[in-house]
Image (spheres, rainbow, N blue to C red):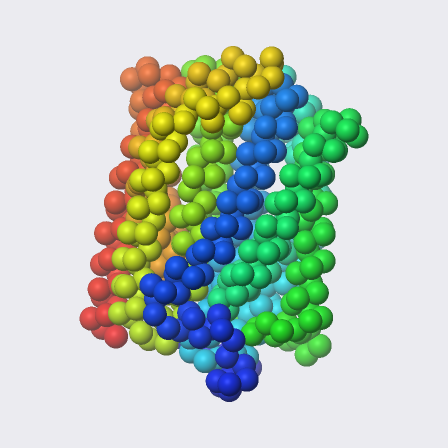
Length: 467
């Protein structure tokens, strides 16, 4: 669908250029999703394990340090949203052009994404560092402001590395090379888990050590990614800047998905800020610490679903580029059912072991009092998990087919029309406090996931009928 900006469509010789990953995403959708999502799930679980381990190390510094991370998290989500959104845009464009057998267009999209990463990092890094303190104050950090600022400024210093690694992962995913993406993501996570305690405690850097651990590990992995994509050149997509020329159409195609996807993450950051505010009003900063720790576990639990959804973008995007719309329906149905099965299993395990999991985040004397509430939060979120797959997989379908604005509209409905309304209703209006806020998240997700699924099915059926 999206043609090359070079003026011609380049057919890749099947025996020479068609890598195994490309052949996979052009084949059976079910097999492709299973094989592609496996490495992504492993890699993302390792990344989420790092997030939990990081929270454990920070919890050792006390509840104030854990809350400080929570106040920076919305800002960090905006940053990650920009990186992940740009990654979703380039993955969508590359997979569609691979499906259309337009290798030159795929190469162009990858090169443009790297240049866009450089420009964004150059423009945003210094301003974000300078405004960290006033923003966390605005978010209600209060007595944790100094800690939150110290942590946040180091995180934002690594902006280019965050963007670059996300783009690199997206390029590999788009051409079906999820194993290599897994290796890089896993290496980053493992390095993080090793470096963090050394910097936090051994080097005496405190909360800043947690941030520097992430930056250092990303720098090391970026060097490996740079070697693969620029010097080794054994990927399907060729990354070269020797004859690079700026093409507005390629930029528009990437941003057509990337900008709405980034705004989706921004909205999630806004809702996180809103929820933090509700929690402070209803129960104080300890409630934010509970939410911060508990949400790390929630994020860990939904990682397999995110892994499936990222694989779905490549598979559905290639099918869309090849005009094989029936494959999109098969891929959507299979990914939702696969995701729901995983979510149900996760719900049961989390419910049974909520107390034991909560103890991980309350092992120090300063954080022990948080344990009962963290356990209750985790038990409540068990009702959240099964309704995530219909929503997240449906959003991936729209991103894969270049309908970024539709995916954004679904996120707006879910976060603003449903989750924000129900958290305020249950937490403030009905007076259920922080527990009401938790149940508002569950209720909003149930309704939002259902609406997204029905919308995607309608869109797919229309594609098939008119294709």
